[in-house]
Image 1 (tube, each protein chain N blue to C red):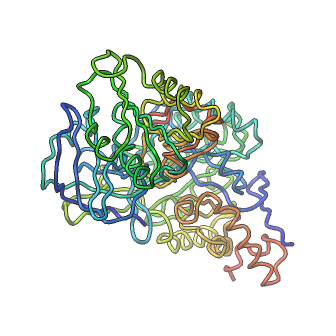
Image 2 (image 1 turned 45 degrees about the vertical axis):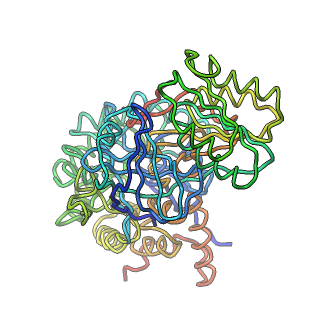
Amino acid sequence: MVDITTKIASIKLRNPTILASGIMDEDAGSMKRIFDCGASAVVTKSIGLKSREGYLNPTFAELEHGILNAMGLPNPGINEFEEEVKKMKDSNVPIIGSIFGSDSDEFIELSKKMQKYGIDAQELNMSCPHAKGYGLEIGSDPALVSEITSRVKESIDKPVFVKLSSNLTDIVEIAKAAEDGNADGIVAINSVKAMKIDLELKMPVLSNKTGGYSGMAIKPIGIRCVYEIAKNVDIPIIGVGGVTTGEDALEYIMAGASAVQIGSGIYYRGVDIFKKICREMECWMENHNYKRLSELIGAAHK
Amino acid sequence: MNSLQISKITETKTENKNVKTFMFKYPKKIIPGQFFMIWIPGVDEIPMSVSYIDKDVKGITFRKVGEATNALFDFIKGDKIGIRGPYGNGFKIYGKRILFVGGGTGVAMLAPAVERAENNNISSTIIIGVKNSNELFFEERFKKCGAEIHISTDDGSKGYKGFATDLADELISQEKFTSVLTCGPEIMMKNLLDLCNNISFQASLERYMKCGVGVCSQCCIGEGLRVCVEGPVFDGKTLKNIEDFGVYKRDASGRKIRF
């Protein structure tokens, strides 16, 4: 038997597969189902202060090598979301609350509420590629990233992770800014800004025109980002982007991630992808005589 | 993968004042009960059940109810719409005698299931439940395929005066049905489920949808059941354990809206 347990800040995880934000996480029932399908923790949908309907459909497109979405941060608002987090607490599922705001005051108000509702860690969405005034528009300014992270850290006791975008000239600069703000971990990457145009109609398919690209196609981008961040910061990294198999997860681990998040993988392999990936990781490790996952974290950095 | 396909509307049919059918070329295999995501360019994309299933040609039948269907209503032959799918599961059509109960526009998606049952020599009875006789459609179609037809109207303008569920209750007490298949307002379907103690039951649910492929969780009910993947057709045993059924749905923001 190999040991694939892992740890991010103070959170011990039964395995390194976490449900990524925005996928199967609008309600407690969906998140519980994903936990039962093998995920070690779940990240909630990104929640803001007020309810948002998001963009009109089409918000989603299946493409040949990945999937494209521009949901537009739909969420019921933090107060309404209390019920879902509380329902989760009854079932002992480690829950990471994802939040988005337009300034540090909003992030603080949201994280205090999330902590009160009972989350185990906080993820700051500083990377959504398609919402005006939020996400990437915040997360491309190192001073703002550092300020928001440090102020949230001062406001709550739970570990704080910062989720970054690959749509930056220098992701390391932003990762360092999060570390300077005392973040407990970096989550990289969010979906990649992209577009699909339909030839027959000569128009972009998504109602928002641009969206975020995810799935298999973006894995090499995520691997590069995690590798570069791992070279330059000392806090743990959670790798996200195109993880579809156990080998993909191990690639992120070797790049320097301590865990991975999985979202679009559900589209390719179904909700039980978490169990499948864990089995594949164990199998690879057994075949290569590794006993513990920790032996492989950052193995590609020689 | 179900890539988006842009198709021209090849035929339109006005079923009644507010209901139209559009036909288009779409050669994929479809099980009665499955649905498409229909893109009305520049307006919206919405889930729609399939109402006509031919080898190469498929059809949708819809009522003017909101911005998207209002816009679609004005489309004419030759106009282009985007189609992806089919998605979800369909009805399992088996047994000796099936009672179909369609409420309002729910009748549209039951039609291919009734035809499939009749083709498989399963005797079929359908209740078409509408508010008044002006809302009726597909009556001729059901007659043609050989199904036994019952009509209920809330105002008694045609057939049985009252709810489709009350009429179903009467029929179930008179005849032995092996299963009940339904699509319509969720409260109607929930009441119907309560009548089906020893009869196998399947209902097609409607929820706001975004991705259609089981990732966004917009349409999830109960313990993470995706109406777009595990549904839209659920059996009675599953529905009995879903607290949402007949009680609430979620709007685009994820807020609960009670029926």
